[in-house]
Length: 152
Image (cartoon, rainbow, N blue to C red; front, side, top):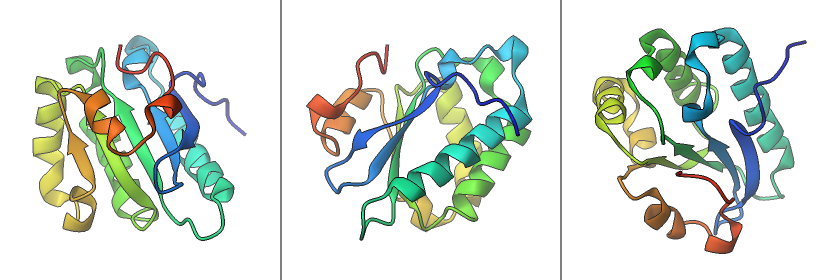
C-alpha cells in the first residue's frame, strides 16, 4: 500500500466528446524539493487502472490533459520521464486517446524533442502540444466539463 499524491495533482474529471474518461495531470503543483518518483509512478498506475475500470461499455481509451503551467527545469527528470513514456508505449499503449499538453514552454518542448523519437508513431499522433491548451481542449471536451483552475 502507498499514499497517493494530492488529488489536485492528478484526477479524473468528466469525459471527452467520445465518452472517454479524462485524466488531468498538473505537474506544476508538485513540490519538486520533496518529489518522490516511486510514489508518483504508483499514483499514475493506480489512476490509470481506475480509469479503465470506470469506462463505459464499448469505451476502451481515455484522454489525458497535462497542464504544464508552472513547469520549469527542475521538472526535467529524464529517468522518471522515461518510465512514464514506457507506460504509455507499453502496457497502456492501446488505452491512450488524445493527450493534450500545454501551455508549452522551452522545457516542455525539450522533453518532447528528446522523448518523441523513441515513442511509437501511433502514440505520437495522439499528442497535441500547444501554447493555448484551452482552445485545443475545447475541440475534444465540452467547455462546461473542463474543471475550473486548469491552465492557470
